[in-house]
Image (cartoon, rainbow, N blue to C red; front, top):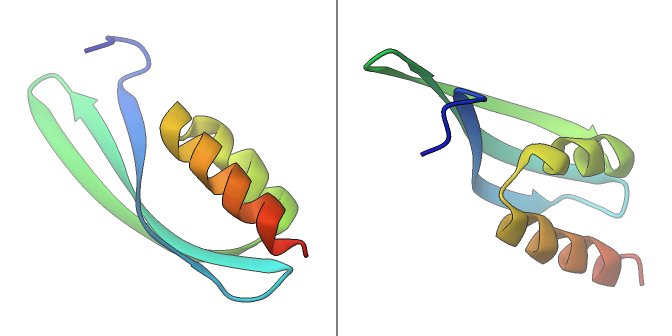
Length: 74
């Protein structure tokens, strides 16, 4: 496991609210020494904001979500 950075973001679930808003919850796992702290975050993002957030997600999720996002533009 990579030492730096000592946090990872994993997507828990995603729901497309409409063409402009994406509502999703994700877990932030912060590793400090031997302790794991789980933080649940939930918020509505615009497409642009969500796109920027996905930069920190795993590459597989990034690819999957980008495809979903692109296909939802109609």
